[in-house]
Each structure stands twice: as C-alpha cells, then as structure tokens.
Amino acid sequence: MYMHCVQVSAIGGFASPIPKSSVSLWSTTMAVASPNSLRVAAAQMTSVSDLAANFATCSRLVKEAASAGAKLLCFPEAFSYVGTKDGDSVSVAQPLDGPIMNQYCSLARESSIWLSLGGFQEKGSDPTHLCNTHVIVDETGKIRSSYRKIHLFDVDVPGGRVYKESKFTEPGKDIVAVDSPIGRLGLSVCYDLRFPEMYQLLRFQHEAQVLLVPSAFTKVTGAAHWEILLRARAIETQCYVIAAAQTGKHGDKRESYGDTLIIDPWGTIVGRLPDRLSTGIVVADIDLSLVDSVREKMPIDKQRMPIDFWKAASL
Image (cartoon, rainbow, N blue to C red; front, side):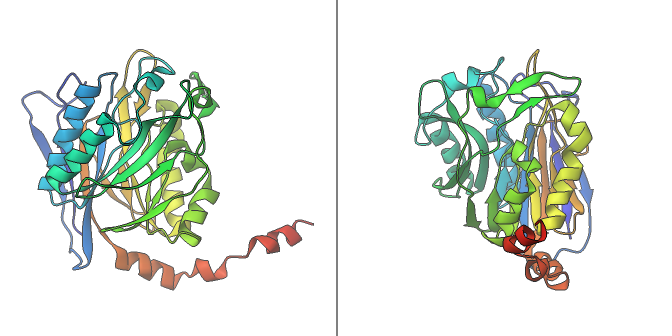
C-alpha cells in the first residue's frame, strides 16, 4: 500500500508551527500499491470565528487534495466556523441550500472531488437551535447525503470545562450511509465515536465499508482516548476509518486535540500527519479488497449473536 502525507503551512490568520518560509512539507512512506487502491485525503485545521478565513483554508486544502489525486477529501467538524463562545454558531447557521454550503459545493465541482463536510451548522427547527450536520457532496457539487449528529457533547471534561452542546443543538434521529467512489460511507460526527452500537449498525445493517468521523475532540479527551477509540471502531466493524480533526486553539476558551488519522480494517494506522497541531492534509490509498479479505477470514458478521439471544442470556 502506498501512502503519503502532505503538511501545509497555515494562512489567513491561522496559527501554525510551520515556518512561514515553508510552503509545504511532504512526508512519504513507500510500499506496493494495489491495483484496486483508491486515494482519499483527510484535513486538519484550526477553524475560527471568521467564515471567509475558514473558507480560504478549505479551498486551499481542496486544491492540495485534488492535485494529489484524492477522490474524497474529509474535513473536520465545524470546518466552516468555530465561535468564540458557546452558542455563537446559531447566529451563522443556514439551511443546506444556503450560500455557505453552496460555496463548498462549488469547491467540490471546481476540483471534481467528493467532500465530506461535517459538522456543518445547519439551521434548526427554531431560532435558538441548530443541527450539527455531516454533509456529503459529490464531484459535481451535488449534496448526496446528510447526517445530523445524534449524540451531543454534554460533558464535564476532567480538568477542563463543562460543555452543553444540547443547549443550542438539536439531536438527529437517523443513521445514514451512502455509496461513493471509495466505497459505502458510514456517517458520524465526533462524540458519536463513544457509542459503538451506532457503528455496529452502520456496518451490519447499512453495509458501510468506510466510517467517517469528523471531529473536534478536546485536548484532554483527545490525548486520553482519540486514537484508541478510532482503532477500536475500525477493528470491531472491519471498516476503514477516516477521522479528520480540528486542532489547536480556536480562541481563549476552546482548544482541540488534532491528530487526523486514516485507519485500515485491521486497526493499522495508514495515514497520519507528522505534526498533530499543523494545518494540512494526509493522503492515503485504501483498498476495499482488504476489507473483503479481513471479513472473509474473520467472519464476525456470521458469528454475531442476535439481540434476542442477549435478552434471553441476561434473564
């Protein structure tokens, strides 16, 4: 499997540890490419409370991914906007056919690349709430599918602050998978990662081959759990996992862990940015025949016990 990473210095007011004199930094690992391989990319960025600045960064990363030959580029949660305080995002929320999403659809069309955009601040059912929505856009700029985040981040982070996402976000109700050029995608957002039953449903009922986990993990929870949770989801579902991450300080009150990862169905990390705090993309070739091979040799789909078995066993 051939895999390479692209790390790009930040512009437009984003903090970056990369020297300004360095336009881009390549880190490449060479191996034998499968004839069935499909190239994907995942972005890492530090979104701020400036829609135009975030769009400029995303636009640059889309061009990088397209130039690298990626069929799909995945952006992290809150790619288009991160407010300075809780609830700020409600003020910028728009419907999926609004001007903000239309800009990103145009990016996909101009570069002929599929985009995973999640979560986007979609206008909610009332003026005080939004939906944290993961949107899949195809290479023509058409929205193919959308998923509204089900599990909301209402957490008292140890040694950190208290989060109450449900105060300004309404939860989704539907599990979503969609076909794409790089396989059947299972959609999720950030905190969903802690609920394995959702990914079990994506794999065993919705036949997902690639799980997308756009995120903005906190610095504390990311350091403790990010990688191990992602690898666990890949192993137990026998799926590829693509996890695009927010990173660094978004302001005085919010900081994200970073560490964008691409993981294969055996739980091996096949793509990772060399700098956890940088803005850039990681590019990897995935092979769906590996998904088939892992599942054939370890047929957990045939060995799983139905829910009725466990109900009886617990009596």
